[in-house]
Length: 227
Image 1 (tube, rainbow, N blue to C red):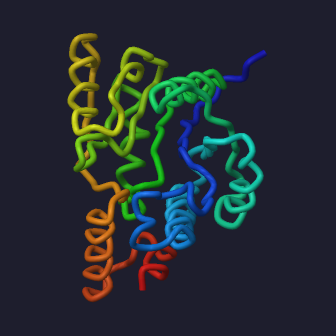
Image 2 (image 1 turned 60 degrees about the horizontal axis):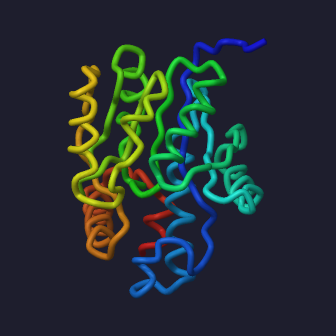
């Protein structure tokens, strides 16, 4: 018998920081090992930010063979996190399947986000989780034309399947589909992903500015690596 849960689920899409397979667009500047280490910092900073008693945190690992590697990393910052394995031919299928698995456990809503926005303010995630109660779709627009976060309270494959992932039109196409369905949508404030050398330069500048202004650094492991 399924036990219904009042809590929401937050799902981090993640992979193991394997040199040569992680953050490949950053390898020319950082080397394979450096790009993998930067990703490890992204992952740990994101988990530390979102590991909170008010939400159940799950990690959807890209490869089954890497589950234990990711589990060992997560235990350092969020030992209560549950791990599941992604499945599907592309990102849309993987997210649809993850939503189906997580919401099938009885959660009232779920939010999926990646590990490419280490400096994302935690209040964005909190707001997305609360909006899932009364909005059909919650999106966090990314400055590259995609989105850094998506929240649903029921599985809607039509919003996720057949999208040209990795292109500047992802956000607009998703919103057009939502509009055609009559879905109630909420947009969070935009933020930036870090998956290119140009975006990494933006992150470095942003964190340096926070440091010089005496402001808290939202991703301390990443900041230490970049120094």
